[in-house]
Length: 123
Image (cartoon, rainbow, N blue to C red; front, side, top):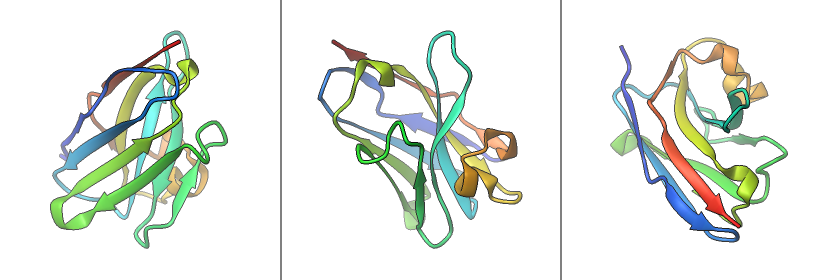
């Protein structure tokens, strides 16, 4: 069983920044971040593969940066220029299968995710 523990969520004003962290008990070659806004389905927004190559959803491209520190088993999501529509619970995720979370941001390929951290962006 892989454990993922997110932190760093909170409330920020429009245009502000937050950095999310996720400590993972067992890093996969494909890690990523999902989010779920109120009343909406969970979606994949960022993935990073074993080589460190990132992939982003169009909605966050240019504003969010995914990174990892494999020495400390920690995944990060730097979020800049935040908008009210970024308000959601953010989940760290691990894909031990075909890596579709990284190549396609496909959430159905996710094997493990954490309990999430809430991000609220006020207007």
